[in-house]
Length: 382
Image (cartoon, rainbow, N blue to C red; front, top):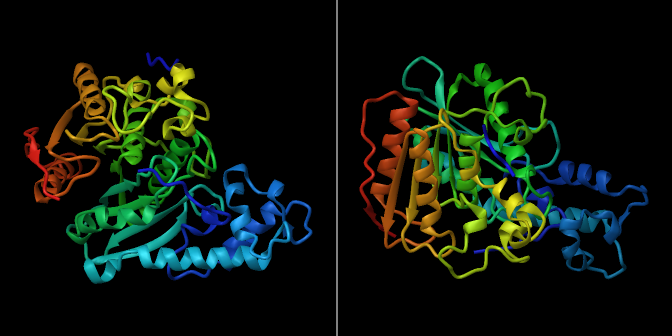
């Protein structure tokens, strides 16, 4: 049985409203829907009290005329600025990877919250006739920052080969909703992909999830909690689908939240200002049981999805020991796991050998190839 006991603050009034908008979409429709939800008294003005708690801190900046309320025009102006910023950050997928077609901002949870959207990447020319396996990327950012658009550079090269489909998933950040909102969103996205497998010619039984930092934590949770009802959630119209995934690529994700200060790094992970504390809605140091319930290591059992874990040995944001602990627990339970240490790397790494290990892992568990994924350490190549 299972026993459950760089940080940037996102600045939004429509930061949750517009951060997910694609270059090809005007922000007005989504901004107006959000306005209607927040303007509860229908007076055409948003007061500080009408805003969700997580976005009130930006009230004074958005209220440009200083009249004590946000007008619809001020609200739309923020949405437009966010849309333009998203345009500048979004990779030109078709130019860099000519075989990839991107469909952005697909709602997966039956809501109009742009954080609950995914970007879908499909090859224009496929190799083979059968359904394609899917590589899903989940972004990092301490659960309180980041954007799904960063996933394009991770999954598009896989899709460009014609052997995979891809997706990059957004989720509600901790300033908007605390745990388990984040894993509920990720599971709803997986269920959406499975429910639309026939439409897009995807293989629902061959889905890999890949994430870095906070995204690494979330993909590990996906790989380890397919049989935990409390973490499944009821989001979206596809609750008849399972959230089980075929394999996990975890890049330097937290795995044991109460022990994130072992050894000490350059931040305190247990106090009230820690990102982990924001995630669970209370200080980790005062609520270790709640933090354990948010820790992937808590859920390891035989039959879980195979893991490739990669972590820099000089990481002072998420200690390398977090991945050592998780790998040991997986191996003890008989779950296939390869832990690769990236020598000299901090909280992030690069180089062709890193991506070669990921490629081999995906080929092994999604394409069924008889390949070996080495656990030998890699020298970091910035």
